[in-house]
Amino acid sequence: MQSIFYKSAQRLSPEGNRRSMQRSRAERESVPELPEVETMRRGVLPIVGSRIDAVIRPPCDRKPILMTPRIDAMDRRLRGKHIVDVGRRGKRVMINIEDEQTMVIEPRMTGLVLLADPPTLEHLRLRITLSGPAGDQLLFWDRRGLGTVRLLTPKQVETLVDAKLGVDALAITAEQLKAKLGKSQRAIKVALLDQAVVAGVGNLYAAELLFFAGIDPRTRCDRLTQVQWRRIQAAMRQVLEEAIRYEGSTLGDGTYRNALNGEGGYQAHHQVYARAGDPCPRCYDGVIRRIVQAQRSTFFCPVCQQKRGLHRLVVPI
Image (cartoon, rainbow, N blue to C red; front, side):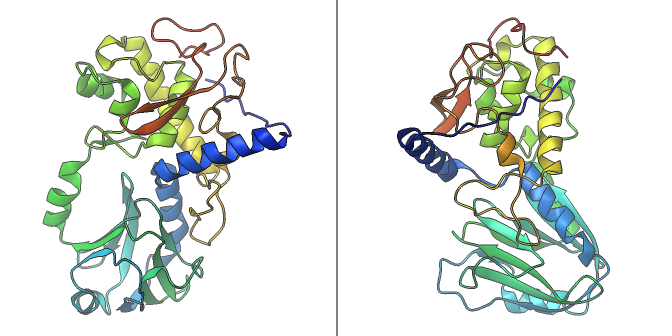
């Protein structure tokens, strides 16, 4: 499968206004997905080996985030312990502690896991002071206060995290996708957002991967062929891995940042997301269309994304 990067041209003011409104609407629906959370995980890997000196909940007059247990209990349980690994499960960052406790951070819509100073101090939700070679702090920042921080035992991780999530989107096979979704009457775009089936794919990357696979997002799962399931799985892996290389997508609201408070770069390579009204960057015959599925925006080309068959410009897998 070949990537086809879209190069935007200069827009007149009315077109710029249309794109701005479209992106604003899409951004309200977007959340950090697998590439952004994996970028966070990789960005804070240097904390492995550091000792936790204190766990602090900074003063904040904004909506409080869900934190379990209370900050004083969390501080007692973690103070003096060493961080042994940083993992990821779906859209969650997993900070593994030497006594088998795991801090599970779920950024949700606007949360960031950082080593550098946060975008603003008033939205800083958690500060962990560290002793080690990687720096002196690990931060969780969340503008809207929808994220969660939980300190869990291995049994709790198994029941509260692992049992609720499907196979990771970077590991799932075409056969597993078909086995889990092949009898569903849901539209494939909607089904891919089900975290109990495939962990990590959200609204933005579901639209992008279906574009690369050349499949109409409205297609019912039970009408997809084995070949189409293979194309979906291959496109999923390609799009997610490429987005990780670019450290995720920072959209127009600028909320998502990497661990050093820098922007991602994959937004420059979006093919269909928030591009309604633009010519298709692959076939040039279609115009990118926006529809709403399960209360979420979907963007696709109605010409080269087909329910049956394969458009001549889609590279077969």
